[in-house]
Image 1 (cartoon, rainbow, N blue to C red):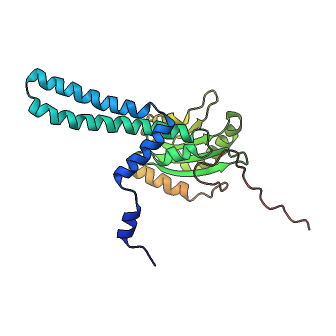
Image 2 (cartoon, rainbow, N blue to C red; image 1 turned 120 degrees about the horizontal axis):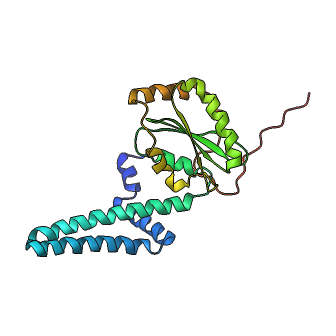
Image 3 (cartoon, one colour; image 1 turned 135 degrees about the vertical axis):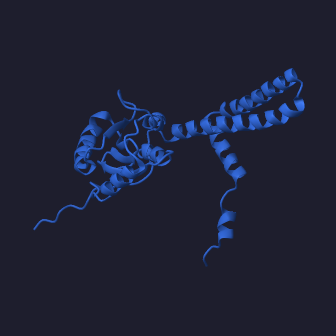
Length: 231
């Protein structure tokens, strides 16, 4: 029997339940995180109330302080939760793809457009800067992957800039928690219409190989293909 929209809504966790779940994960990842959230909210409330005392308008500043403290607390909570998420997925194959897919803005992300049996991979993100190839893996192994993928895309991309970003812990690579910030600093070279046209051209290209999507457990290996039959 198919589920009605009401049944699906009841199965989805409510907003407060989601916050409790994130808070539990955050407390396990960093025991100091929740005290920092409460301290920031309480500190904001105290500051606003003190301002109300100075101007002798507590009737106005107390409600304002409550709203401001809630806003500050939620902002700090969200930032710490995001940092904890980065800490959990850091080092897992597919972590960079997870960050790319949750980026704000007009980005089209194609996971694992290229890779190898060591689970080194290259993801493609198309946006206002142009084409961004994001690799995961040791520097000495992902360099050839990036070079080959850039060469493969160059004809379809035409004069559009192609950037390559290496995510990892080697020298010259970008940690996964700084990936989104790095991409947001890239120049805006294309209009929205040009982005759509570019994305259509690139989506028509065949993928060089198929890779599993999303973060992959450590120690996993790519399955070997079938051996050719001897005639």
